Image 1 (cartoon, helix red, strand yellow):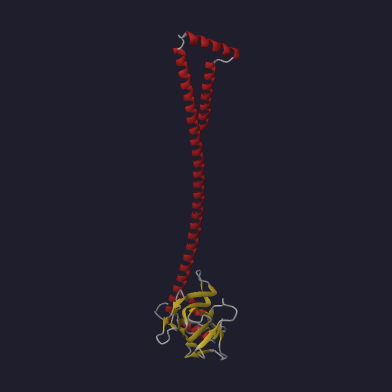
Image 2 (cartoon, one colour):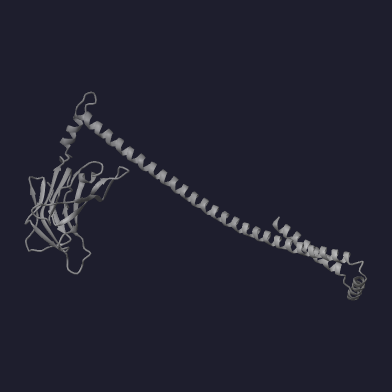
Length: 321
């Protein structure tokens, strides 16, 4: 069994030497329980954490369980060690195992008990080579700067140690019997299964990368299409506004031309009706003499105005085209 030590981000309130005790080679607990861990003065941002360390040799176990009784309502569990990544390669890192809520003790309403358990499966592969087990205590009751730790035990099932000696390897090779169902066949099946799982993880990783690349490309194309549609929409709105303004201007020109034509028609009709009137004829003759002296005919002036209006309408029609 490898040696295990402990450390905490908060300090022990007493001067008692606290160390890790091993019971039955499968249980690690702290001595001098209960303990009171106190937050460092002047730094309220330091979280309350307790860690078990296997520094000399990593812990290799198939199952691990924590039994905690403390004044915190929740605990977060983290495991640091060596594990297989998605490519089947070994890498070192920390894994978040979960957040667990405690249950109140009937005798002590301010104490909560929790016992999370973990198996060394695909999600907890780090338990096969565990170096640090970190427990973070959150939602402290009563005094937020003091943790009352009544019970703390780490129970684990150690894995059988690997036999790397020459005799052990010779025994394993001798146990290979491909024609019968012996231990060698089982080992070969395990190797094939492990290889198959590694290939599956590699394929999943490659497929995920390809899908992510495709999705990113589609998202970019969609963004470009949206920008193009928005630009086209703005352009159409501008053109529609210009066309509407031109139509309104045409309407105004038509109305002005109609008014001028109406006035010209009325003037012609009045002039026709009064031709027989001698007084009116003399008046018209006098006006014509005055206009002739000025070099401009009234009817010609009105016709020029109408022609100018028609010319403006033609210019507007060309703009619309």
